[in-house]
Length: 174
Image 1: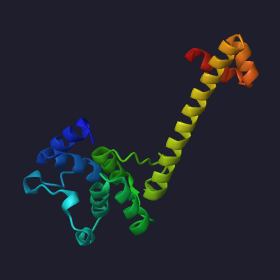
Image 2: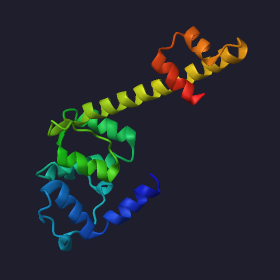
Image 3: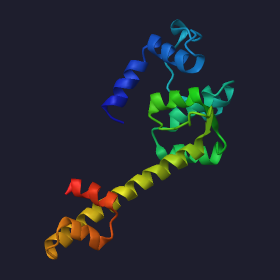
Image 4: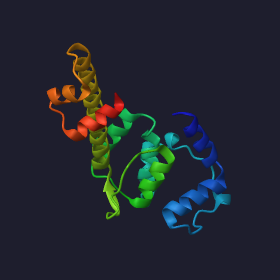
């Protein structure tokens, strides 16, 4: 959690800002939450038995926020206690805004299964990392062939069997 997280938390501690944000995300901007009646509540301090008292998805949102600072606890909570947790667009927007949850709801959908969304996010991260490693390896291979075999960049790319698109992209990075 860096400076941006601290700044966001300090900003959201203002009752009028908090009420405005939650009214926007949860109630389409209608002033349901009165800033004058709010008191600060830290989700991390809410007891496990207390979350069941909420009559809406707010309990799940707050519990997600509670565990968001500890990825291991968040994963344990989700997979052991809430494997079928489904949240709507508004709840996901709140989580993304408050704790940068990076949950994605497709435009044509109104809700998302949280565990699946996290799995999708992890898969995308793995694919991105794999692509970066592959590209880094190919660049290194190109450089080595050019240096050690005295090949031109095009000859080295051909020796590696790179497609014209991959060759053009990699040559820009040499």
